[in-house]
Image 1 (cartoon, rainbow, N blue to C red):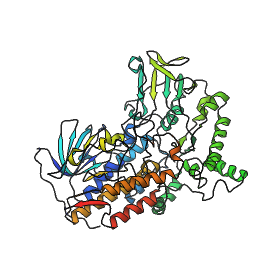
Image 2: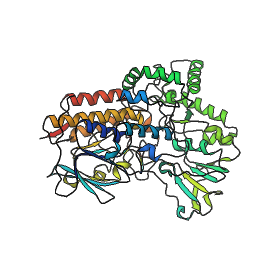
Image 3: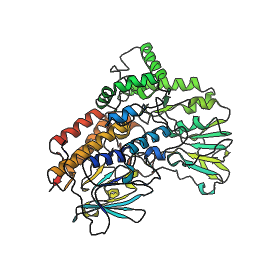
Image 4: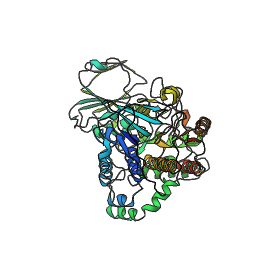
Length: 546
C-alpha cells in the first residue's frame, strides 16, 4: 500500500498537545500499533499505566507464569528479520522470556521514546465540534487526537479480588497473580494460601509448592487441565523451523485458532472405544491444548465431549494418590473446554506432596479472613501469605475502567450496560475514530492473541490510510451493522458448548456483570476473511464522514 504524507494536527483549544493518534496500552498490541502508525507518517503517543512496557506480560509476573501457545507462534510475524534474530529457549515460554522478547522488539524498532510509562488514561471524550478525542491521564495531562486506539488488552490490570470479609484485618501479606510485585517475593518457609484454581492458580501452585512450608489451596470450581509437556527447544530443530517460518505463519492465518494444532476431522462418536482412547492418550503424552481438537466435535456435541472429559477425569484419579482429594479435583457440571482449558506442569501431582492441602470450598465455604489466616465453615487455616489467583474483569474491564464518552457525551459504560456492543470487535456505533484492538466480538482470547492482534492492527492501519487517501474525517460502526454482528456472535456461540459453563468468557466471575458470551467463535480464518471483505467494499457497515 502506498503511504501518504502525514497531516499533522495543530494544538486544540484545550491547550494540550495534539497528535494524529493516541494509543492506550504498551503490550503486544500497543507497540505494534505504534510501529504501524509511524509507517503511515502519523504522529502518535502511547500511554501505559505500568512502570514498563509489556502489557499482560508486565502485570502477570507471578511464579510459574507461562504462555499456553507455543513460543514459535506466540510472536510477531510482520518482520522476518525480527523472527530470525530472536531465538526461543522453550516450547512454552515463561513470562520473563516473553517480556524480554517484547523489550527486544521495542528496542530494535526504537519504540520507547513515544511511550509514556506510569501514566494511566482516566478519560477519553469525543469533541464533536473539533472532531477530536480529548484524552486525560492521572497525571493531570490532557491531549487531543484525531484517533483513539484502545490497546488495553483482555487480561491486564483489571484484577478481581473477591469481596471476602476481613481482608483488611489480615496480619500477613496478600498478593494477586494479575498484579504481582516487581520485586522478588520470598515465599520460602512460609505458610501460603492460594485462592482460585483457574489458569493462574494451576501455574502458580506447582511453582511455589516445593519452597513453601505449607500450601493450602482454596478451590471452589475445579478446572480441566492437561499437561503442557514443556521442554527446551533443540537448536537444530529451531533452525529448521526458522527456515520454514513463512509456511508456518501462513498456516496459522488459515486456522481457526491462529495456530495449527493438528486437528482431527473425525467425530469422537464414529470410532470405537479403543481407537478413541489411543487418540486421547497420544495427545495427553504430546501435551498442549491440541487435546481439544482430538476430534472435530468435542466442543459441539455433549456426548462427544463426555468421552474427552471422562478420559481426563480418569487421569486425575490416577495421578492424585488420595482418593478424596482426587474426587474434589475432578471437574463436573460443565463441558471440558467450555471454561478455559489449562495447561500445567505437574499440577495434579502437587497434591501428593505432604505440605500441600486442598480445601474444597463447595463443602466448606470461606467464612471470612481473620488476622491469622482464612476461616472456613469448619476450620481456620493459619497463613503468612494469601495469593489471590482469582482472575480478571476480562474483555470489557480494562476498557470500562476508563471514562470513555462518544457522541452526545454517551458513556461507553452506559452503552454496554447489558453487554458489549461492537461491529467486528473493532468499533462502536456513536464513538467515531475510536478503535479497539482484540475487542469484544472478535476471536481475541479464544485464539493466538498475537495473530489476532497483528490482524487487527493491520486492519486499523489500512483503514487510517484509506481515510487519509480519501480525505475522510471519521469512521464509526453503523448501528444496524453493530446489532447484526452482536446477533451473529451470539448465534455462533449458541451452536457450541461454550455457553453451558459459567466462566470469565461470559463475565460470570464478576458480580453484577452482564452474562454475555464475548469472544467470536467463528474462527480466526473466517473472521479475517470477513474483515478483509468489509474493507474491500469501502468499509461496508461503517459510517464514513468527510
